[in-house]
Each structure stands twice: as structure tokens, then as C-alpha cells.
Length: 138
Image (cartoon, rainbow, N blue to C red; front, top):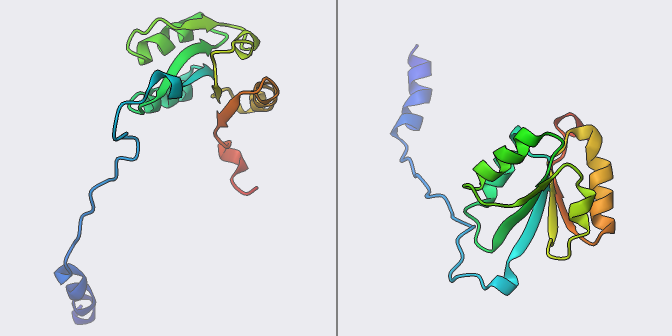
């Protein structure tokens, strides 16, 4: 008991320093429209909506389109963007042909990632996709 107290006491007496989080998304000045990255999202289920929500506070980034097989997810994407009227479609290839889209977020199920990522890259788009949870050791 005395040994345990002796070990814990220095830790309890130590000064605790709390660091303020860095706000990396904050831009020092407004981003001009010519520097805005316009993206489309493919897959607007739970993870897709989480990714959409994460883009909202970032200046100079704008979602202009969404693709998903389910119509209800089209509505979910628009709601996640605060009711913004974006193009929604079931066929993501249609979005890859748009010249005003700079990048694609791939939020599809794991078995669909490869095809979407490859086709988006072939269309000249930058692509963001998350590594599948089961693929941690590779």
C-alpha cells in the first residue's frame, strides 16, 4: 500500500498542461472562387455523410454533386450540406465527365473502392478514400 502511494504521489503532484487544439482548417483570408476545390462524393451513407460534415468548416472546399444508388441518400447528402441544392445521381460516371469537379471523395463500401478510384483518376480527378478497417496490417 505504501509503495503504491509513493509511486502515485509524484504523478498526482505533477503540473498538468492542457494544450489548445490547432485549427488547421482556418484560412487567414477568404479563399477566392478561382482557388475553390469543387468535389463530388460517391457514396452518401453514414460514412459519406460524416465525411461531408467534415468538409463544411474548411474554407475553399465545396461539394457540388453526390452519387449513390439510393434516392434517400441523395436527400441525406443535401441535408448534410444544409439544404444546398447539388446534383445527385445514381451513376457516378456522369459526375466524372463534369469539368467543374476537381476531386472525388470515395465513400463506397470496400468492395467498390477500386473501380471508383481508378475511374476517377483516369478522368483526371484527385481522389480521397479511406483505407478499409480490415486492411490495417498492409
